[in-house]
Length: 249
Image (cartoon, rainbow, N blue to C red; front, side, top):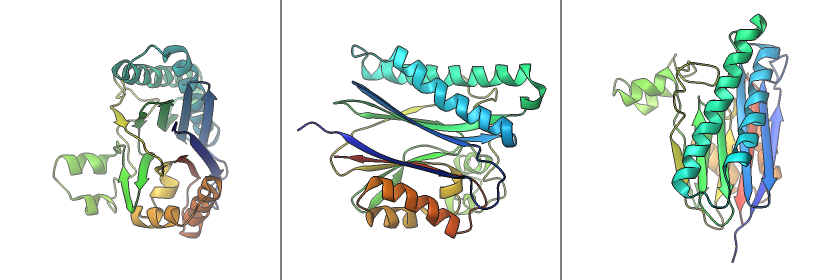
């Protein structure tokens, strides 16, 4: 039986920010679905511009690059190229307009070639999770200074969750450290899987266990997305909050 994906999406300015610098996008094509979540940085208009550019550029480039004849390894390369292209566009915009000079954005994307695996990639500290059964797994790696300290074995994972550098990013779109693009994770999917793409306005205040518990209790993906955003706000999030929930059926 062929698998399909249902999607719920939600974004909220939050209780403390003057504007919403997050952007989310879902693009569906006959043979391809592209889901993108971005968290802009640089203040008000600039952050909004950077995140919107990311969610516009990546699907557009992928639609041109990923065709039915492209294999899995080539798909990974194309995803990296699309992200690098978005990074270059954001950097050029910052060079042209002084008000946008310091803008940047995180980004996570999930790309599903129908009948095949899910391809997941990210830059920054927005995240992609897989909830399967009673387990939640983070599929992306944060590009924060705290995570770098974890990888250097200077601090523990638990210490990173409260470290003062947990929100300080060393890699993001609009910066020079993107290089040839991020690693791309290839995830086999099965009916009943639920994926979450979210900004740190959610995962920064709600623990992974609480995210999993909430998602396990919600049957419909749109209600789950709306509820997760509200859970973050109720938990004291001081940021914009955005997420996309994907159900494999």
